[in-house]
Amino acid sequence: SLNWKKILQGLHINLSVIRQYVDYLVSEQNVKNIFVNGTTGEGLSLSIQERKQLAEEWVRQGKDKLDHVIVHVGALSLPESQDLARHAAAIGASGIAVIAPFFFKPTNKDELVAFLQKVASEASGVPFYYYHIPPLTGVKIRVEELLDGIREQIPTFQGVKFSDTDLLDLAQCINKNESEQFAFLYGVDEQLLGALAVGANGAVGSTYNYLGRKTNLMLQAFAKPDHALAQKYQFLIGEFLNFVIKLGFGVAQTKAVMTFVSGIPMGPPRPPLVNASEEFIAKAKAKLDSIAWPDGD
Image 1 (cartoon, one colour):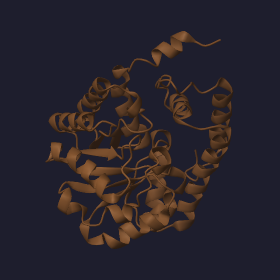
Image 2 (cartoon, one colour):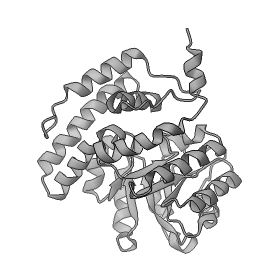
Image 3 (cartoon, helix red, strand yellow):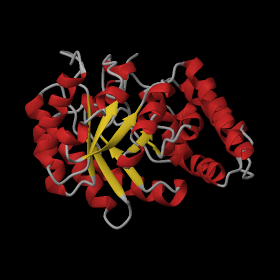
């Protein structure tokens, strides 16, 4: 019994909730930086037109409320990626990010940098980030290698969204590029504390939609440093993620969790992804409700 109404909803983007979404992230989650059209936002399942509309709406609604709106402009097609980069620059995005193309893949560092450079050069005044996500792209070129001399080719290069579990690669990036002041934004939420320990200086992840406040408290504890408290937060976040990963946790399930936590309808995913089951939602909600956080709620 496929719900066709739900499936059809998944074929349209809903711009009208973004204002409420921004206000919720700022006031309830203490999150003031946004990464638009990435993995969680199903950016690669959207049309170019939809991606532009979303980027415009996030920039518009984020004005005077958000500190940074970074727009992911990666695509399989170089001209499309360049078009999105020009658009992001024109609407005043704070930064752009690009994943490695993943059908015809770059086979070495030089090929990947050449692709990234051709996108970055279309938005010459905008900070540029490489979005490293080998589990989804299959492009396993180590970031340590990629960063070698990258500023010469991409003057706007600002940092990396590092969504991989290889903390050795991340640590070497940070060790070798200390003087460059690059941003290393970690993307595997259940391992953020490990990444902070080797020097990551930010995070971009799906759980911060609904666990942003808890993660900010973890960051504060780490900075103090109160490592025992930081560990406690990471262990509890991990306990929730470990539980839902065993049930099958992806973008559709993330949308469902965000919907029940925030009360903002995130809608269904776009095919080929399918909606989270009612059983998943009930179990995930019960698990999240059962966690006793250090800050008492």
